[in-house]
Length: 231
Image 1 (tube, rainbow, N blue to C red):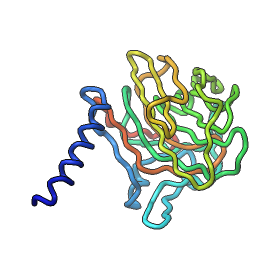
Image 2: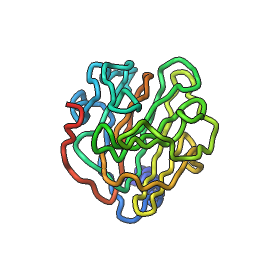
Image 3: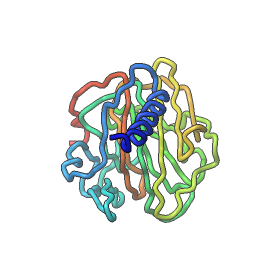
């Protein structure tokens, strides 16, 4: 028992330290690590044929294998895996992403939020280089996507076969949206925007491939409601 005490104390200190980074009232509302094949049932896909649960060694994850047959109503990403059972307003999201495509300026992965239907949502486009169509926070509002942030970096380095940690912080009253990539202290992009309030959260890519794992969403509350958007 005494030998275990230092380990338990360290675990408690780590838990307390992390919890202090969360706003008051935030609780873990969703957690997905794909160790069970049934985890895929938590999602609704724009094209289910391009998504699967894969495994490398002991690590299981959700994999996007390429662009499917989905055509969005307006110019926006083609591949979306939506966590389909809960909507969020305020939230903090963390996940691990791995991009598996070839290197080019728009090599990307995307995170969606505030999504209520296929024509209205935010998405974060994390790409190798920033321009008017890449590496930004975009709004799709019954029109082709439009950037709403000033990127704080010129792009990100996906590397080859490298997992990266991402974090999104959203406060709907303040309108604040912050995006972190690997460095959890300095955002790579941020903006103030109040276009959408409640909506679903998801992952995907504009037209590339990649992997998602260890999803955690903290929020003060969530609304349980099935999406049914891509049926």
